[in-house]
Length: 264
Image (cartoon, rainbow, N blue to C red; front, side, top):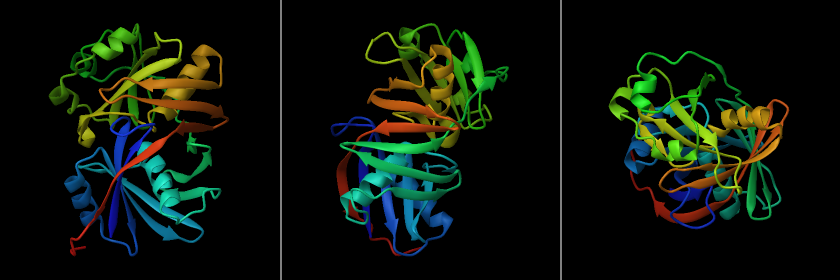
């Protein structure tokens, strides 16, 4: 079977967030999926299988299965269109652990319909701020992650967490965010998830399901542009639509290989 590597939230190779995508002709057990994800050693490996009028989609980090992933969903839709499994004007419909997700093409951009995951004010767990090594202005959380707002973009970019200590916090990941200094963007962020096997994720679609409602409320606008300021970097456009968030980004195929292992 073929396995694809796609740079998501990227308009050129070797930027954005790479995801592996494996289209299954038959289902494989979870241990096999986890082993493939560990072998690929990317922040996410997506497994797709045709199901009814859509596709069953699951996401695995090198360490665990996750409930929601944006960049590997974008990569999966890209692969379905690139390989002709879907017509370019046909929506990609995915059944996932977070319900039905859809993606459509808008020129060179892919628009994904995701659940909004707004944060609420929260007390930071013991050790969180010390592990992040930042000065917080606000601490919030949703069902997946903690989010820490800091003073400015320089503070976001300078963050250098203690990943060993951060791994001890019982949460999927931690978002650090601030208003953007560059007028091209509205907010910036970084995402750390060592407990899920990913010290720093390059560009995190699911984190923007939290960032979008947070900054939409603070800035009084429903359409925003975010930049995830990792070493690879990537832009995520967000639009609030009631209890949903539309995430916008591009994708670039960088590798297609044959997975030859026979165990399942």
